[in-house]
Image 1 (cartoon, rainbow, N blue to C red):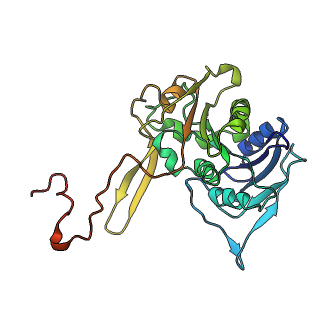
Image 2 (cartoon, one colour):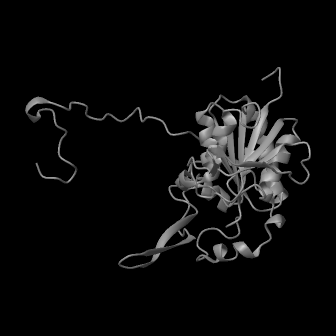
Image 3 (cartoon, rainbow, N blue to C red):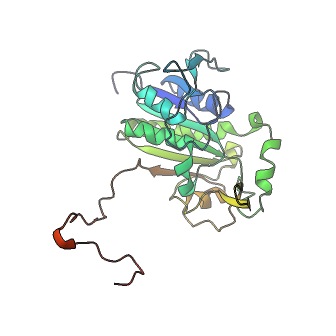
Amino acid sequence: MEDRRVRVLVTNDDGIRAPGLRRLARAAYDRGLDVVVAAPSEEASGMSAALSAVTDDGRVVLTGAGLDGLDGVPAYAVAASPAYIAVLAGLGAFGPPPDVVLSGINRGANAGHALLHSGTVGAALTAANQGARAMAVSLDVLSPAVASAGTGGAAIAVLDTVDDEARNWATAAELAGWLLPWLVGADPGTVLNLNVPDVPVAEVAGLRQATLAPFGQVQMTIVESGRDHVRTAVEENGAEPVPGSDLAWLAEGYAAVTAVRPPGHASDVTVPTGWPAPGGAGQPGPMRGQRE
């Protein structure tokens, strides 16, 4: 990349008008990178790596979308999921394919193994599958250190009463910008998942490399079920964070960064491959707990 500017795609799953998207694009632009923004025209949270789009006669619908304070940055509202946008970018739909994909800044932490379901992280993992470097960035609006797990769902209840524009997006953008030079120099396919407390930058205790917590910050529960229906709700997870995990660092006021990988084969697992075998020989053994 020494002989040309680094090309960066900025996307998200909160939609083209989300304040975190503008702040993340600005962080890359201010560092002299060649930035293009392409984000869902509507919110697409929880999409994981789904490849879905709204088409008109087979054409994916996209429109130009100017972003406040980013007059020099081309931006597109795309009627597609974040991962689909990452694929389109890799195919050159928005200009030269990106070297780096930044996804976020998400409204809410994407922590623990629950990041599997995140559209923010799904875009980053999809980009890595295409050989780009990527970073998913999230702002922990649920429990910024002072309101960690165990508030009985109260933190979730007040989320929509806070003006999103007033949140500390600049804090997450600064940390993402600080990590960008390292990411640009990393091996293709490298993915970082960054979670940042929703506090002014001076109040962040530091940045720590973290493991993934065995659970997410919130959990789904069934609140009603009947013969032909089920109704679910999302509530804050009350489990104690595992030391060294992303949720544990967030609860202590730190930003947490975790290196993650796209799905790949499990080289340490051996599966029986003797089928078909004459006379039933070579069959796998009984299931655990099953009688011979």
